[in-house]
Each structure stands twice: as C-alpha cells, then as structure tokens.
Image: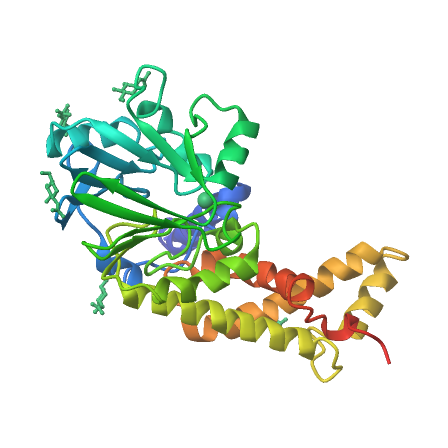
Length: 356
Ligand SMILES: *[C@@H]1O[C@H](CO)[C@@H](O)[C@H](O)[C@H]1NC(C)=O
Ligand SMILES: *[C@@H]1O[C@H](CO)[C@@H](O)[C@H](O)[C@H]1NC(C)=O
Ligand SMILES: *[C@@H]1O[C@H](CO)[C@@H](O)[C@H](O)[C@H]1NC(C)=O
Ligand SMILES: *[C@@H]1O[C@H](CO)[C@@H](O)[C@H](O)[C@H]1NC(C)=O
Ligand SMILES: *[C@@H]1O[C@H](CO)[C@@H](O)[C@H](O)[C@H]1NC(C)=O
Ligand SMILES: [Zn+2]
C-alpha cells in the first residue's frame, strides 16, 4: 500500500529531477525553442547524399553545392569552372561535387566577402600549386585578407572598386559592390543568363537572419541591400546559407521582417520617453536601477536599452513568431542591434534627443 501510494509522488519527483538536470548549465537554460516545422524554413530543403553534401542543378551549367548549412555557387563554362566561396565546413566536399559534375579544371575563384566561415576553404582552389586559378574580390575584401595573413584565405590577384564583368568562356558573371553593409566588401554576384543572384549573409530564406542582424558591420547598408537585390531581374537567390536555392518571395519576406523590426524599435524608442509606458520609460527605469546601484550610469543605461529592445522584440514576435524560423532564438539580438543602429546611425534617440 505504502509503495503504491508513494508511486505517483516518486514519478513526479523523478520528472522534476530530470527537468532540473536538463535545465542546469548554459545550454540547458534555453533548452527548448519553438519548432522549425511549420515555419517558412522547411520549404526549400534539399537532400544530402551519403558523403554529406547536396547539389542543386540550376540549369545552363550553374550549380549550388551545400552541406546543409552553407552554400557554394559553381558555374561550368567552356573554358573551365568558376567557384564562388569555399566554406571550410564544406571543404573537400566542394571538390568532390565539382569532380562529379565536370572534368574541367577550376579556373576562377571569387570571394563573396572576407569572412572565414565562407572563405576558409579558398586555399583548396587558390594556392601556389594552382597558378592558373584567377582569384577575384572587391578591393576592401582584398585589404581585409591582406591584413589577416591567413594561409586559408589567400589575397586575390584581381580586385575591383564598383563593378566587374567576368566573361568565362560561354558564361558571364556580373559582380557589383553596393557599399558597406554586412561586410566591408560584400558583393552582388549575378548570372544574367541563368537569372541567378547571390549575395551572401543577406537573406536567410524562411529564417530570421543570423545573430545581431547577420553580424553586419554597417546595419543601414545591410538593410538597403534588400531593395538593391529586388531591383535585379532574378529567379533564383543564393544567400550562402540555409538549405536550397531561394526566390524573390524569400527576399520580399525578409525585407518585410526587417522593416517591421525597424518600425517597432523606433516606436519603442519613442515610447521610452513616456511614463505611460513604465516597462520602457527611461525615468522610471533609471530611478529604480540607480536606487539599487548608486552612481552606476552604465547599469541604468544597459537595463534601459534592453527594455527598449524587449518591447520591440515583443511587437515583432506578435507577427513573426512561428512564421520565420528562430525568431525566439535570434529575434532579441536583432531588436538590440536595431535599437543601437537607430540611435547611432539614424539619429532616433528617443528621450536622449536634443533637450528643450
Ligand atoms: C518561392 O519559393 C517558395 C518555396 O520556398 C514558394 O512557396 C513560393 O511560391 C515561391 N515564390 C515564387 C514567386 O515562385
Ligand atoms: C556553357 O558550357 C558548359 C560546358 O560545356 C555547359 O554545361 C553550359 O550549359 C553552357 N552554358 C551556357 C549558358 O551556354
Ligand atoms: C564524387 O563524389 C564522391 C563522394 O560523393 C567522392 O568520393 C568522389 O571522389 C567524387 N569524384 C570525383 C571525381 O571527385
Ligand atoms: C591547390 O589547388 C588545387 C586546385 O587548383 C587543388 O587540386 C589542390 O588540392 C590545392 N592544394 C592544397 C594544398 O589544398
Ligand atoms: C514583453 O513581453 C513579456 C511577456 O508578455 C513581458 O513580460 C515584458 O514586460 C514585455 N516587455 C516590455 C519591455 O514591455
Ligand atoms: Zn559573413
């Protein structure tokens, strides 16, 4: 009897015990995020083979190679192969995939931008034993790579300032630098015959962008690039990440998300000067924080800025949670980054504007 009557309690304690175990440590704190299933993210996945990569045939000699997380763009021409980006995680799989597509050698290597997560396998294509490979990037990317002195990312031999047209046998690629945004030299790579546009770390089809608005060095430039992309005549979009090739719809959807975020964060900054909104009101927050932390101006500012970001995150989630994947994972970081950019780049300072 005693054993039986204790049964449910034992089960409950075991259940609580396992929950506590799962919640200890850093990873455990955010153990459970909303499912990706059911969001726009699941629409364009492509299967991987046993070797861990997938190839999408985009027509007329154009291919996209992925390991599921990163993308490489390949163009087969009558004079050899053009490769755009070599993420280190895909590494040798890119060589296998190309070897299975064509027996032509790689003759051109293009850096979309400097970041090592997309370029750290460049040396597999551009190295001292491959002098026939022409390496190309924007001049800012070349400066960054020269400063980095990274043997995995050799400095390109050809650079350009505004635009460059690469004619490779029967294929054409138009390279264009729209200005600083995600990186100092992130470029548009456009294949006019195939109507394919690649711009890396810009659009994350079906997902919210990567952490802190794609870790962009200049947020206004990164936001502006959405409109630039949509001014091109393209059917297929490659963003360097997240599954298979995307389309115009994915670009339009992310543009809407980013503009909602901008509007919501600007609104939160305005509300933060109004005691009618005590969860963000700067006077209310400062008074409370300074009472507990005398003279600590950074403390009251940190709490205030995160409260503004939180109000913006709440408003943005109301529309986008469950629609774009991982709004609950990176959405707050986006609100924080947007609040900072609005204050510093857009002069939307809320209660810290010119005092009357
Ligand atoms: C874009 O692709 C998505 C699937 O990823 C599809 O639902 C949508 O209809 C496509 N849009 C266009 C304009 O083809
Ligand atoms: C260019 O040539 C390659 C290799 O012969 C071929 O696969 C591709 O379809 C051609 N592309 C165009 C646009 O003619
Ligand atoms: C083709 O791909 C397989 C792995 O899928 C790889 O083992 C093989 O080396 C590749 N062939 C060439 C010629 O690269
Ligand atoms: C150098 O590049 C060639 C292709 O041009 C490649 O076959 C070779 O594996 C690369 N060497 C190294 C050490 O990665
Ligand atoms: C955001 O929403 C949560 C949950 O409803 C709420 O507790 C929090 O106060 C809101 N944030 C702000 C700054 O109003
Ligand atoms: Zn990047």
